[in-house]
Image 1 (cartoon, helix red, strand yellow):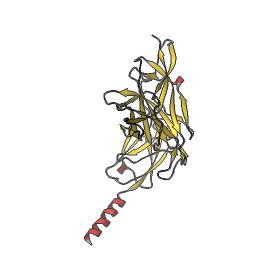
Image 2 (cartoon, one colour):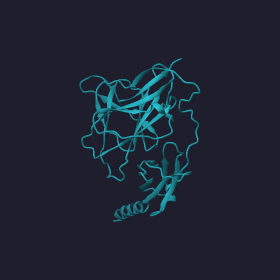
Image 3 (tube, one colour):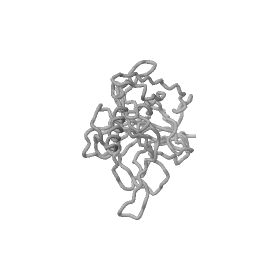
Image 4 (tube, one colour):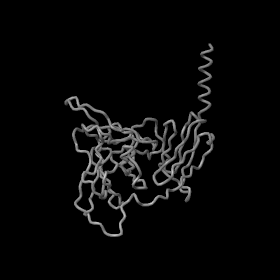
Length: 295
């Protein structure tokens, strides 16, 4: 009987310590709402603000959890959850970043470029892998010439998800490669690049030629985030399309995963082809079109 009372007490305490937090994400200077900002708790649960900047999230560890609100081009906000109260809507103000433009290619003279080249994973096998809403998948595109260039476009090889209930929106991002941390580093373009894919098997090209994105000598990391722009959907709703992955025996980490901007983790998938003796990893078939500066 004492055991039952203890269990009931623990459940009651846990229930009482949970609450819903409501907010609107806004630009701290202009007051304009910020759509599709990443909202994530320290314990790992996350969501997006909707097209009007609104968000709602249920929190269990009210006294100990912290909310992180972030999006490209703004300083992240970290807010103790116990500052929120039930049934009240709070304005979460994000300050625009004031970084310099060293992330993009700027020159006072007209640069000359060589022929266009396509870089990325070479196809060997064709596996389809489903990514979840809120996750960003990033790959390292190596620079075989060790020369500076510019990025003209990004391709993503996709495959139809037959049971998809919604179509995700892609947010394309570019990062420097941090060779010390062996992970994506500083953002190279400080704006969101939203793309509407189709739920079918094809190669999606994203034109970024006019964005002035540098292709560094040590390569570039390209991230694709799957964003929900449909508002409130049921838990574990199926989103399409799927990424197409290719097999490689090279086990050096080249793929990372990031949930609602909470931090990079190993995103590669170990794989053994049952028809072969080869063992390796699967990486998404994402690549870039580049032009190198003529010296």
